[in-house]
Image (cartoon, rainbow, N blue to C red; front, side):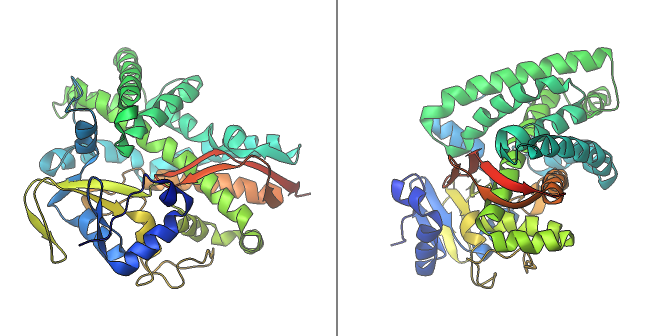
Length: 391
């Protein structure tokens, strides 16, 4: 009999890493309330790269909602496989090249510097509201060619839509409503860009419609997907990184002395406390995973937070170390054919926010009222911080 891991329990919420560590010490594979779970880096990597397993979020939503499916939905990167998936990536990928991202870096750095500078005068701030939350929605709006003023509204609906990954039937009506709002936004933007195309990803996608590569429904679904993927997770990545550095002042000091460590430090933050704690995958046919039989239609949960603390891969994995050189990449962005197309963009945004913070603040410490959750996903609701100011 396999151990059971249920990440919806109060015991798990109280000590997620402890629960996962104890289970991992018993078995690399476990039972979960929805199917099977994988706890080791090797096991999670195997699921992510095996074509027998496809992303299972839509399957999870279907089971949670009694098989209600979105009406009029087009193709998405996460929900497609094979030739469809490759075709969509070819259309979207030009907007996530290093050249495009570097063009956005200057705008992102300027916005981050302005927000951090504005907060610096008071020597304290609620980091999420004043710095982290405004930046990813603004970057998304720049990319798709819409008014930046729409950013907060879009971030709100995106956060609700992402609750679909929980598989909780209680939130699915809210998720469906949020998706309706996001599709309405996409429809309005598509109409505007048809009339006045520009140098933006929406216009590029519509060019794909004209070439017969995409449908209008594909464009709507891709815009909704790109928003959900690029805003919420990046915002919380910023919050988790600063939260960790505040809790480990000796590591902040190391990074402040040598800002050249920044890129590696961000990867260590993502390893130590990932935003995406787990992902669901499903197999259409009976298969074998590292010698374990998996019946067709099994929801397999890859516990990335456990894989990131696997001692078979990471030396002293429960130690947070900004100088660590990861022997294997953190898996927040996936791996293989579904590797996140916006990974470099998200990294750039977190880099520029932390760069602005390190250049302006000294000795940051957590204030009163911190609200951070690390059970179902890495979520930072409120992050009050106090700090000194560099002269």
